[in-house]
Image (tube, rainbow, N blue to C red; front, side, top):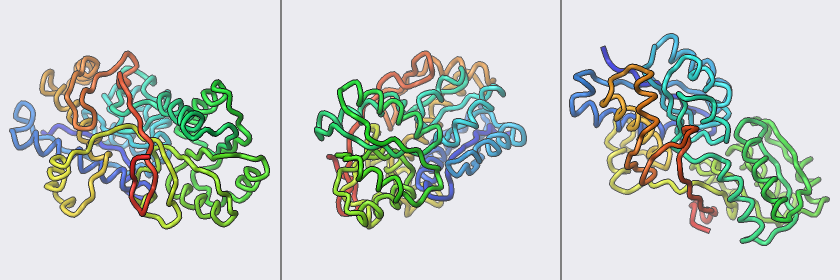
Amino acid sequence: SPIKIGLLGPLTGEAASFGQNELAGAQLAVNEFNAKGGINGRKIEIIAEDDACSSKGVSAIQKLINVDDVNAIVGPACSGSGGPALPIAQAAGVPTVIVSASAPHLAKIGDYIFRIYPSDAFQGNYAAEFMYNTLGKRKIGVIYVQNDWGQGIKDVFIKRFQQLGGKIVLEEGVSPEARDFKTELTKLKGNGAEALYLPVYPASGINAAKQIKELNLNIPIMGGDAFTGDEFITNEYTEGIMYSVAVVNTPDDFIARVKTVSGYENSNPNLFASLGYDATKVILESMQKVGTDRVSVMETLKSTSYRGVSTDLIEFDQDGDLKKAEYEVKVVRNKQAVNY
């Protein structure tokens, strides 16, 4: 019988480019292993479930564990799914490698949970330092999505910005479905904000950007790494918006390999493809050493030292988080994300 790897990610909806890339990368890793005969003569297969970047992750992960009886899980890409879903994987003792869900507490859920993308504990600090030191802003408004990701990164950001001597003149949480920000933006205008920190998901960000232009709010806007998808970057309203993102490599030779995966010949592979690939690879490399016993795989993952595509060296700390993190700021120019 095949070795089953469950995959959790947003395969549809506003963040579908995250999930589809994650799946393409994971499938490439599986194809490469299967081409060499699988693991101990067993072929590997991926069972992918759509979590829509939301609490649908709960039913998706329950199906993978209880119905499909997967040996390990790759994903999720979004903390909005990971927050409620990952405790289920931990309780069931299923080794799970998070692709990019970055809320600080997720890797700490337990010893079966690992993450190959840096924690937002790093990203929130980085964004605060950038806005205070590089942009020279002292009064900032914050509009964030009320889920595990938005609240986690917002808390870290505000704490650091205030430590530096900055002032938060607005702090408003919005639901992931929010599309009308006029109330919050009008308050922002009245409170004299010099810039806006906007850690929300792409559809919210696009609507906020449109309404900011309508209100003639000429202030810099900075989001988080949720803005890294094609949906956001190629939109007519997002010109000039900045966002922080972990430095993740997606080399040309790797992109060419992703395009060999059936169904992805015409895709535009992004960083989620290299993250999906590496998350799958560290699991399969562990299984190659110790077989599919879940406890053994978990123990082997702890001592991972792997030369990845996304990151030169993947090693985990005692929480299962990446040991090192590097960030950069991108800005949307002519429907492309360029370095600030």
